[in-house]
Length: 314
Image (cartoon, rainbow, N blue to C red; front, side, top):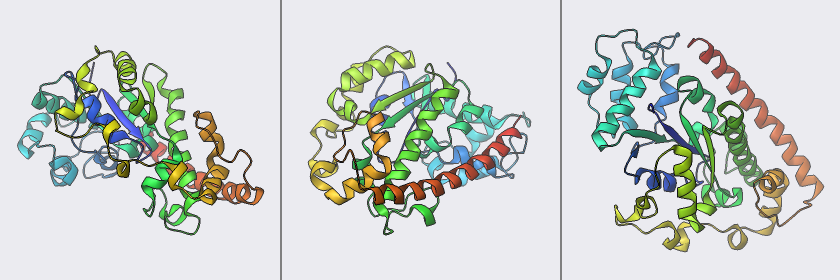
């Protein structure tokens, strides 16, 4: 069992933070306290990582200056010790040592990370750590839209600005893209390394979900997972105030529901979510189809760029 052992991913605002707290409560698993966007940003920095994937001299400085990494409590000196005298150590191996060190600091043997955006970079994760598990959290996209309202969606801002006139269609297609890219990872990861968790099931059947998750991760079930809230004196998710949870049935205007379902209705159905508009207006479907094509083109270009980088890692 090597580290990183697992990655918790999903469309942002889908419940990945809740699952992070649940899994981190397990006595054998630690989840990094901060998201780790540096994991996939640093390989693009040639001062930090060489083209062949080996660590470059600037990596330790780049990590030390990253605010997310700094909050992990790993010092510049500790990073230097992890590097040792091996100047040819690969980036993937060096990051594994960071995860191992974090586990030692937390008194746990298995270490993972929660970074929602990695759902769009699972090819990078798999190329660097082919044995790492992926737990993909999925939530009803209409509730995700309500939670993300008035935010710029992080893909290509000009095309998917959450504040534009087509905000609902953009949000639907953006959610669909995140979900589909996560589910597509099953083909390369396989079911032994890929697990899907529905946010709604985690709320309504926490013990059942946690038992299944432990089986997937190869660790014994721990009741501490469903009692995660006791460690931080917080409310458990099922007791959270209604203001912190979204319900599209009561909060989302019917015209917005129809627009969302015109864009991503089939994906909602495939995930088992019911639709309010099984047959949305043709003009709404046509508009969303055009925008989907644009978004997929942009996503494909990004994937091609990353594929070129990964091929150089050897």
